[in-house]
Length: 488
Image (tube, rainbow, N blue to C red; front, side, top):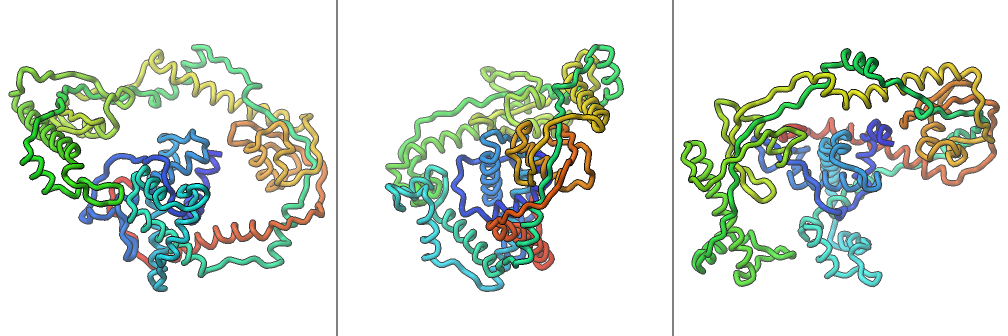
């Protein structure tokens, strides 16, 4: 499934953003910091539509949560990187912006009645089966969503839908009949499933070492950094009323309730004191950073030492990345905030990557050797067995009869049938994403007389995906896209 989704992710992007209306997230997911060009207020601009960093972060978070649902809670940052989720998030927004430019050219808008009608259909705002305004505010607050921003998002998605509805996709009778014929082609087959459990591998040191010798450059130690660092203790001061009032008056916009209204001083006092202490903590960290560089640190400040690498990193990826940019001529890093505390780092030494010895690499070499050997031996077994194998004989099956292949799970069966009905050879073998190989021999073939009344919706979905892809390409030629964010 993962391989299929990676191959077809450009179609998934279009499908996901067209079908989504202002998703209320199950938690925010982000990915760190980027550098900007001259237009720091936007990460991209498509025609007359600007895309902000906040929109990009929300797009990434929503995509992450949707993929996590598809993978039943087993989607993680590693899979997100393999899917290029950051790039997908930006691509999703640029595609939306293209449609919004088209909407503007038609002078299309969403009025308040249309907005309210849509919001009232979202059951996560319901109480006792009906829309409830207080529940609406509470749900947005719990998801850290601003009321105005949320409603702007809903309007944007509704505007995209309204624009696409001006360009309807219909079917005709010939298309339905063709698809119905294709779906009624049935094969009676003899098939046999081969898997790696049937393969044994000699993983002796002799074979393993020979495998390692040919690939030593693939088994390198990590780059690591020997550093010294100081940690800034949190400052907790007693502030007089004048100072608290002064800070509040200068920073009122920091203190708002769930409706976006400024909180009175008497209710915001605790938050004001917390911000003041945070400010003094940061100032103290900067003063200690300067003293550290001048070798004038107070005696009670402890300097600690650590070797940090990708696999041995008690901080975070951003900190490691910043440390990697230090040099012997510029070894000090300004205080960075990590999990609520400020740290100042000094680079002592860079330990470059080097080839591991056989003993050091053995634990990494073993699974790769076994995997490669099993894959090669399984393919050899399939080729040697193809002419004479005796497997399971099915009844007449179509491309939608995955449940009739009992030796394969649903994903494997669907993948096998999709490939089988595209084959020209009567006998052969097919390799599945799971690593299994299925030998097959088509014994008979016939055309069933079943009539599927749902073909029109399948054709509409297929044609819509193709139409939307063509529309996006056309709009890309019409509206200029500028990306101001580095790294994507």
